[in-house]
Image 1: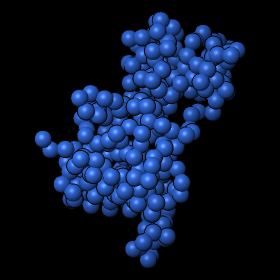
Image 2: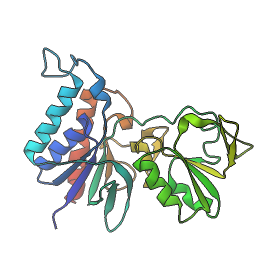
Image 3: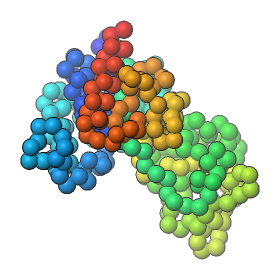
Image 4: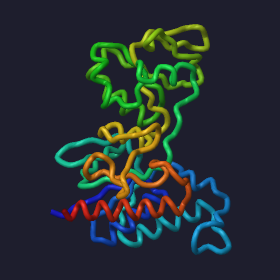
Length: 270
């Protein structure tokens, strides 16, 4: 049966990985969603091959065009989950993609909203992974902070376990989160409050670190820990680019993608 690889992220690291994988004859799917930090670059003058410079958005589009031309299946879908089935499984808003190998190349992890209490109660009632920590809130009241498909997915993971799942979608209405040694309450700017036993952060779209935690992949802060082959501690899962830390440059991301893909190819070929 033909092996396949799913790459999450359409920036330099993800596209570079896709180019190497598809040229090796691997069935390659590239999942792209939202904007990239590279798009904000007005002119890149320190990347090989563009003596007159090139805008970040143009470089991104050229990369995706190249990938499509070589046969990469580029899908514009938001990834909301990562788990195990018969194989690895990447869950999007549209469908589930079984994968023999996965490369996380989603850029640097987004920050949680700057609301008082989130950082203070991390590990004491504040979680970033419903799949990981939902078990501890069986029969309790939890809140999910965030709107959109990723937040909806996190709520659906918690609903079979928790007694009540509260959707906190209007972030601007929240004054703070409070408690003692554990988070206990969400306080609103209008003076009202709600009692909660736990808070799950699902702000914006799922970052690489969020997905990593769902599989038990080791992280350090917002950085995914990889070895010299860009392999994580979970067999078949690799990470490349800004999500692994280090130099946040196109050249490093492209190199990471190439290394991750060649490592994944060796893994798939046994």
